[in-house]
Each structure stands twice: as structure tokens, then as C-alpha cells.
Length: 298
Image 1: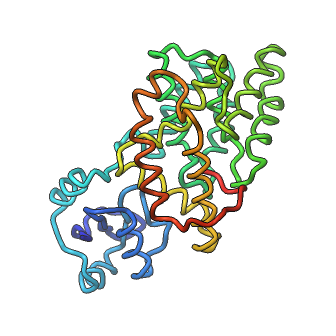
Image 2: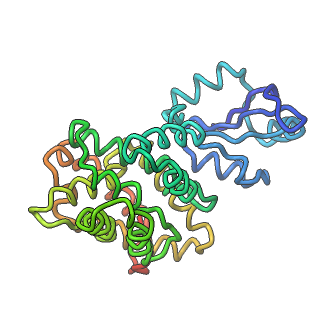
């Protein structure tokens, strides 16, 4: 069901309401699209809509509730995004993390964050970077090797939805860290970044296993968070026709299910493996079972 609170929040010379779903983001996006609400009005778990649209949205079926009721409904739905994962908060937290990781190079960190915050990104954005860093801390009990942490920062620093993104990101490592790291460290960070193209680290490659498990941790999240991830990936490929996207996405999901094991570290297997296979299998069941374009990415 779709809910809306009264116009109360001031911005841009008017008042705004919040539009939410208590069931799924897919329902919310479908309702918004049907009512001509621009995608840029979406803010992670709700749409901000101006006062002039309030009555027309009620007429279209949105249920009016108070602001407090809306907040409780959103929280109860499992769709609410925590404050720390909102863009401004995420960027602040990430800049602090970068400054601790590589003191003396704050400008380099700001440049990387500008890349991660490019407007075409919907999943591969600062929230994903923070989630990968937090997953690494979980896997290592907060003792993340420096090269692995740097590789996490760079692994999607170039993201255009292209098969060349990982290679381009690895080249960016060479370009930006060449005067900061020693030759061996530089090569290791670049190697780890390239590894995220296949997520197939060798059995003895602990650093690679850590990074790949952290990058894929979203697959083992709750069904609600997994659905959000899938919806965000679809928005990154909004320019791709639905049938083509479904074929491409099905191929990606099959490739992930073919990874054996999907997670390589003992902690990753324990934490995410079972739920990840359940999520991937459920998604694949809803996709067309046709061969896909190998250029599509998860």
C-alpha cells in the first residue's frame, strides 16, 4: 500500500510530503512513475513530493497518514534506510575513514568520493563502498589489511556498467597511488581490484578472499535489502530494455550461483552463504531463463 503524510517539510519555496510503500520499493517506484513523479525525487526509501501534488496523489490511491505514522510504517516495513547510509552522512563517514587509512592525502579521498557519488550510480555508490568496508571489518574483526582496504576504495572507483570497469579502476590505482605506495603494495592493490571482475580468488589468496566476500556480502542480506539491491541495479541500467536486462541479469545470477564456494572465508560462508543462495535462486526463478550478455554486472 502507498502512504503519504501532509505537506509539512519546507524546501525550494514550498512544502513537501513523503510518499512511501509498506510493501516494496518496486510498488513505490511503479506508483510514482504512473503519477509522473521524477526519479530524482526518490530519496533512498521515499519520494519527496511538493504540496501541489498532495491532492492528486490522494486521488490516485495514496493513503493519508500523519508524519509520525508514516515514520513508524516505514520502519515496520523494513524498507527504511538508516541515517548513516544517507548520502551526506555516508560521505562524511567515508572521508573520516579515508583520512585514517591514508593520512596526509585528504584531497585524494575527496576525489575518489566524487567518483563514487556520480549521478548515474544507484547501487555502486558511497553506500556500497561503506558496506564493503564494514563487511571487511566483520570478516577481520576490524583488522583489515591496508592493501585490502585500499582495494575496496578503488574496486568500483570507475563504474560505467562496462566489462572494462575493473581494469580501468586498477589503472586508476596506478595513477593515483603511484607516488604514495611502494611498488609491491601498488601492484597488490591493483591485483585485488582486478580480482573483483571474477570474484574467484585462489585458495591461498586470503586478501583476495576477504575483498571478494565483502563485495558480495549484499547477496546474503535480508530479502528486503536484497530486493533493494536488485531494484538499484535495475535503475543503473535504466537505459537497457526490460527484456534485454532480464536476460543479462539472469546470466549474472547464474554466474554467481556457479561460484563454488560463493564465499571463500569461513566467516563469510557462515554469515552470508545460505541466505545468498536463497536470494539468488529466488531472483533467478523470476527471470527469463535465456542466455545473457556477459557484459552485464551484478
